[in-house]
Image 1 (cartoon, helix red, strand yellow):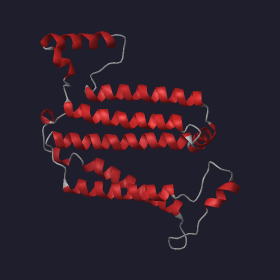
Image 2 (cartoon, rainbow, N blue to C red):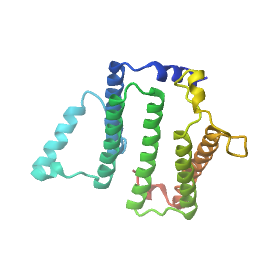
Image 3 (cartoon, helix red, strand yellow):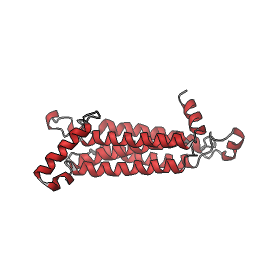
Image 4 (cartoon, one colour):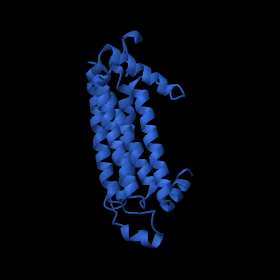
Length: 220
């Protein structure tokens, strides 16, 4: 039921002012989440935000003028900058192609940021010299294989709910899998399997820390 309003919204919204508003909210959200991740959840978005930040810059400057340019967490900052660049590119693409499907664009943002956080967490584990189990690597490989395959079948779609039923029929294809399933069905199978392996990665990702005291676990 939740997909019905999303499809209606995504199909009919092409107003440039809506896309500008959404892009502004998108960038602001990226800024807030970046600050939360960089400062490990200790950053507060309130009236005293500017004053606290100015005090930090002033203290760093007193200890050495170049200290204001030195990030406290270099690895984390590099990854967050890359993540922001990806989101800015997505935002720019959304404004440029604002007549396209909004629901699909929103899905792309959510999927990209999910994968970015996945990558962020994996890289941070490596930087903190934490072990990634062979089992997790296997699940990760299977997840990526399913994701790439599902993307192929999604792009080569056999339906389009952006169009009327009559016009959508031109995408219809012969059922090529067991003479019963078309590309859209295969996409559903692969994406569901990919989600299963994604949850298995999350389930086993920190198994190497199962016998580590929580006071010795790095926070990132």
